[in-house]
Length: 284
Image (cartoon, rainbow, N blue to C red; front, side, top):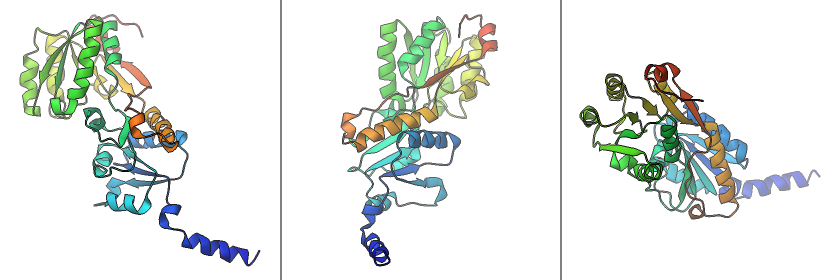
């Protein structure tokens, strides 16, 4: 036994680095709590060995070099910065979660994952529940064009009229909102970094207040601003969903075999005081 232990140690030290590397490389944008929830969800579903890199912990990181050295079987990208850092990686499957850019529709063949945007059908159902028929949307074609295409198809099937206004930069938001006066009975906020910014948030809620129209949002943060309701994806569940996809990829499927998915676990939050003030009827 005394002779066997040194032999085992010697063999272990001679193994190539990739043989000892983790199966999954996890690249996380920041230590934001939402990303942490997605990470926890992923690890509950996918329990293989992993190595995590948080980009904000480093002034600069050569992700391509790390990937070459570690040769993981799969990469998980949590957040937009993580997904962007991996844009040159083409031969290793990548699962993206918590990234708005995944919804743009321009993903490489080796990338799949869970969208951050909730399926348009969920919102259309919500609009019908609140009995709104003409819904105003401001959007950027580059950021939200693919999502708007899906939304228009879902709205047409349900008999809901989407009144669309395209913006090319945030400065156009107030003017485009003004063109919706008298033409809509609600606003739908999208997580579009061109149409919806910190500098334009007030313009949406000023419009809603002056026109006495409800706003439907993508985060319950906006209930405090005066939104009537918000649909929000569960981040832990999104991570778990990504973990289930990872298991399928590690089992032999290719990214092309697993289309990008909408988040499955959705919660509805409502602002009852706003709903009452607008004279709307809704049953939870």
